[in-house]
Image (cartoon, rainbow, N blue to C red; front, side, top):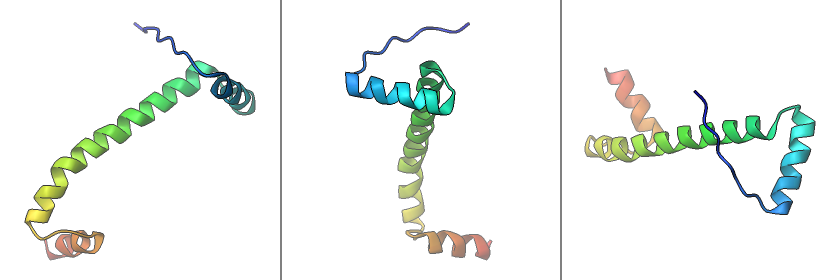
Length: 74
């Protein structure tokens, strides 16, 4: 079952959204849903990173190069 979310947008944002809808051939709901899904994915990544970074740092892993060197060692 789907639920409904109502948003109040400032006029300038609504006009920009309407223009994007016409250009993309999508509805406001399509764009809002995609934006919310992306936001939630980013937040989950940030939360996971906040846990993983201290664990990696404790093992001496600080850079991308450290990660790759650690992977090659295994």
